[in-house]
Amino acid sequence: MDSHLSDFCYNIVNPLYDTSKPGNSPNLTTKVSDLYNFCIEVSNLNNSYYVLATSSEVANTYSKPVVWIGIYIAVASVLCIIAMGADLLHGFRNKKMWFPSKYFTLNAASITVIAVSMKLPVDLSGSMPNYLDQATKMGSLAFMCTMMANLMPSLASMDNTTLLANVVGLAILVITIVVNIFIEISTCVIDHSSFHLSTSKYNILVNFKILAYIYVVMLLWLLMIMISSAITIPSSKQILEFKYQAAIKRTLQDQDNLTSSMVEKLRQYVRRHWVMAESGSPQFVMASNQLSSTTGFKGVENFDSDQVEAITSVKLVNSWSLPVVALTCIAISLPNISKNTVDILLKNIHESLAYTHLVEEIVNNTCEYENIRKATKAIWHEVEEKCVWLENTIGWLENTIGKGAFRGKKSVEVLECFAKKAEEIVISINKTTNEEVMVNNPKHLILANSMYRVARTILFNYGTDIEMISEKELFVLLSSMIVDILYACFTNLPRVIETKCRESSIEKRESSVKVAAKLFGRTKEILKRLEVLELPSMHPDKMGFIDEWHLHLKQSVA
Image 1 (cartoon, one colour):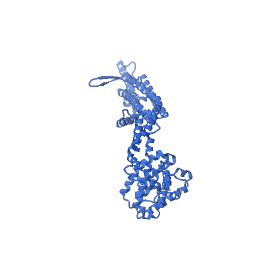
Image 2 (cartoon, helix red, strand yellow):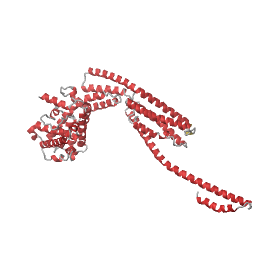
Image 3 (cartoon, rainbow, N blue to C red):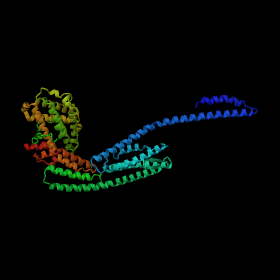
Image 4 (tube, rainbow, N blue to C red):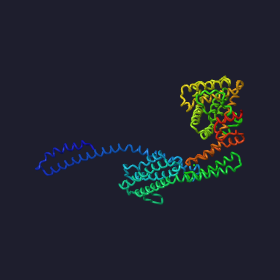
């Protein structure tokens, strides 16, 4: 309302009011007084309007974040729904009669997201003036009950310490929600208001206060179930572990009585462990076609030689994948080899290295071998993904060796180039690196040393005959050496499969046996081919190391 209106009223009426005398006409005095009182009311109305307008403006300013808070809550709720839906699909896909918690699990992150989605029940400062507000708050409580039910199976996949921390965290959140709901009920924020749910046949009257009590009871009931489960899970795991170990003993006894082939024995071994791991899951109560021939493991014998001078101050061990990567780098760098042939080799080595690295993780599991495995993975990524050997250069050889650098060169010249450049890199690292770093084996040193020894060994073994070997013949020779090394490595696959079946951690056992089953299925043809080969008479513990194979084969020849 305009303030000028009240000022105008006073300007006209005040002079009349001041000049009115007691002796004047009573009617005139009364009318002037009425006009004066009217002006006072106009002024009061103007002030009230100003206060109301100011309050409305302030309220609008403070309500602006509400929209973003709502979006924040909606995003958190959607994340929870997606995770629960993924678990549901995972259960159907794996034909589970229960829904394992693979994606929606109880941990610090999920508790944080759940707390955000429960902003409405937890917030005591928000007003609930109409039916929609109260219905939204009741819907959040129903959503919380649903999430708690879906989180139950994930309790069994935790160790005892993690289980205690996560259950306590969720219990604090649930108790906070329950206390807040009781406060809102006692202060009549959640009142006896009711709303109708009408259908074609029924007309249902829902009372918000009664509904809130029902949800509170459900939350407390689910919380008690969760706490009770958390208390009994450790002892249940011990019972399952005892039964599992007893079943393993029976399986091993039956295994000894089998007279079938190694592949059939392994099939039965995996099948029985899979059944035991599946039924004993805590959440329930979880290269062949590309290798065509082998030469009796000559590649393992001839990939390295004691006649090659050591150029490192610390002796570096070999892993299965290291000489494979080194030999592959030389093979794909040879001139006059078709791109299709190189692509086939790269594809086959890529598939084979997946099994090779798995063998190394299980059998060569010390820190020293882990450093080598990481180095070969990094170098192979450069070779395969970046294609730097084929298109331009390879990182560890700086800008010297590219495929174009070997055009017109003979096989012996290619090998000499690799050997010399690798030797330069090793010597350079020796000069600039202390012994502690040498022991940790930087990746450039690891591959350069392997490349140097592989190239020098081939040159030494073939002597002057190397001059007569063409690029294609050298490619075949290198490919044969790679196949021999891979086959020797794959003799450890049964041990890897059995180790995966005997996973000691009960939380990881089901998934570990599943990996073993898949690995057996993919390598079954390789294992069949290995059965017809005559393996060296080595101690089983030594067969996991390529250096032990190399030493044994050298001594056998001598």
